[in-house]
Amino acid sequence: MPRPGGIRKFLRKATDCSLMGTLYTSRSIGLFPGIFDSGTKKFLCSKCLLVYGLIANAAVLWIYLKLDPDDEIEVEKMNPLVRQIDYLVEIMAFASSIVTHIRSFWNGYELIDILNEMILLKTQLVCKYCQQFDKYVITKGVLVVLEIVSSLVIDMGISWNSSIPFNVSKAVCGYFIKLGILMAVMQFYLAVVHIYLLVWNINETLLRTVSQLKDGNPVHPEKLQSLLRIYSRILAVNNQVTSLYDIQIISFMVTLISANIILAYVLIIFWINIRSESLAFMIAVFPQALCVNVCDLWATISVCDLAEREARRSSCILKHFTDFSNLDPELERTINEFSIFCKHRRVRCNSFGLFSINHNLGYRMIITTILYVVFLVQFDYMNLQFK
Image 1 (cartoon, rainbow, N blue to C red):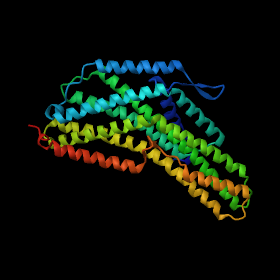
Image 2: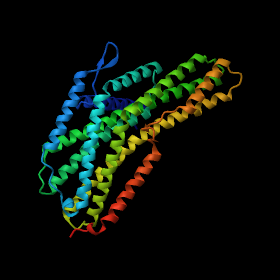
Image 3: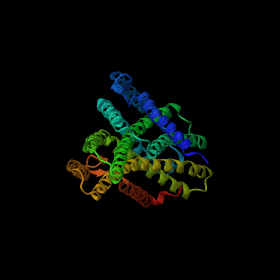
Image 4: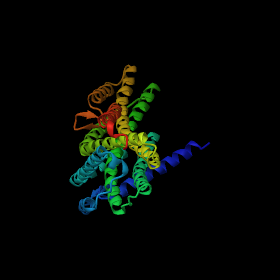
């Protein structure tokens, strides 16, 4: 049985690998213009990297448009609706990529400011080890790799199982575009999970303060006032992050839901026409893409829900201070201010201020996906069986 220290060491290394992989991948595809200055311990925004990202991604998108379109696979020839939906999803993914890169170029300096503020907050809080943080970072890193591998498996499976040649140039450009979207979502994901880490450390400090009071040890009001100031800055960073990535996250979710709908619909068609040996093979290829997409979407939603739940936990912890009588008046006033602040201002991952990204939204997305698949089956029922 592995020792807890060994597991912790492994998680730390895997987390560092995922974080560094995201940093260098984002920089190489032009989505992160930051250069770390070891003297000031801060990131600096490079104009050269901003211009490189804009030109490189514009070139890839232009090449992708100029390449010959892929040949239709068997299910698209037999069912025109699948072809039309697939074309629509491809347009949505292409538009999402354009929006992602324009926003990355336009908000490059703001992204660097947010990152530097997070580094400063982590330094001031002296963040403790959090296993939940490591697990979420590693999970998302693995899912990003699986997304690319899943696309490769589908492309290779279609090429191997049909007469359609594998278009290397088209595939490379497509993977580059998809990787850009995934890295933008990964940046948002890491920002949210770091916000969770900061709030978690504040909550742990509050719990230690409660224990200190239970033991009869004095607590200086300045300690809680400092935590309140840091908490306020965390909420400001949270608002900046949600504002910076709102369009990218919405476009990512809509594209992924649309892809899941067409994957599920195609699987139903394959299942109905399972007599064909080639279609039986495709049934073994497509479900893995559907599973990876669902897991990736749910991971993004879960990290937002995690940050919200940790923020609500702050209010619950502050209620423990009401168990103590004869508190220092200044300390009691600070606790009341902290409680009111946490009640009216919480960490939320809102999209355009309209709705929160949490598990409730995730459940509604799953229900919507299922309903759309049912609608497609009902609408195109006569064409499900190949002639």
